[in-house]
Length: 403
Image (cartoon, rainbow, N blue to C red):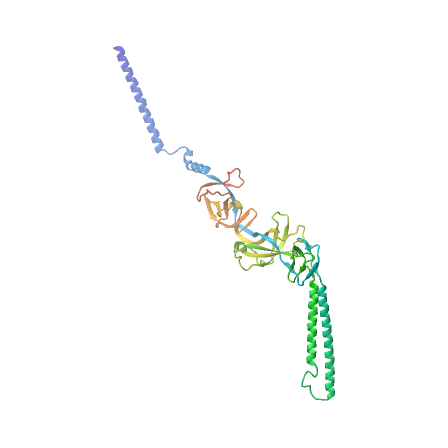
């Protein structure tokens, strides 16, 4: 019995101790809650939580490579491709008929000929006979004229000796009509002689200008007829180019454009030449709806690298100064014709931009607004969204994970 009573007293003491510990813990917890609720934060790091959160968002935002640029005045440049064409070309045709006795050995496609060079000779025998006959006719007509003039002198002398007053009633008395007819015969005979001389000259077919043989249509020994083509020659003293320009390029041309010097560049870069704008097209091409500039290249074969007809060259013309434009890499312009930029709140914006003019690897566009500087996205993506928060990284500032 004493043992049982002793156990019961021990259990009561243990229960009482645990209850006190539990109540004390509740009191401490309540004090902590009250302290946190009513007391101001003592840790300064707690006040920086919003800024820390913003920094975390910024660190999670996509990094984009931007180019910082400002609007400036840039000299426009008009670039285009054009084909070099002969300014003058001629298809020589026979004026007389006959047999080709001679054909020049240089009368081959691609050969160069000089002005006045004899290219072919037609048998001149018949035309020499025509000339001889025409000269004889002229001599007889001149002889007849002399006779009529002499008879006219004698007729007037006889009229004066007759003592009759005034002039004869008929002009035939003094042989004036006969003299006029004789003079007409002389003029006709002289014209026939000149034409026979010209026909004889046409038996020798000459190059009208220095050029290149484009095609030959006859061979030695052939009989040819008047109007039959002999050879095609293209002039080499000057070539011409027709450059088509868009309305935007046209607005950037200097004033006046006629007389402007342009640079011609071979696509492979082997040759460079100078050309001058000689005239402008005053109508739109019905197919391309573009206007045309015509340029002339003097002495295209004279340089170290000759400019040959049929070549395609890049034409470069310096235009007028364009104010308030941005110079950007080609990569900044999307396929849809937009340029993306990062505004002052680090969000993406875009605007449609048609290049005013271009240079190799560069485009020039109007500034999107009145701001003095712009952060242009260098590598825009199709997944960009307007208003998207990004982390702008300047081009070349380390590994940015280019967008």
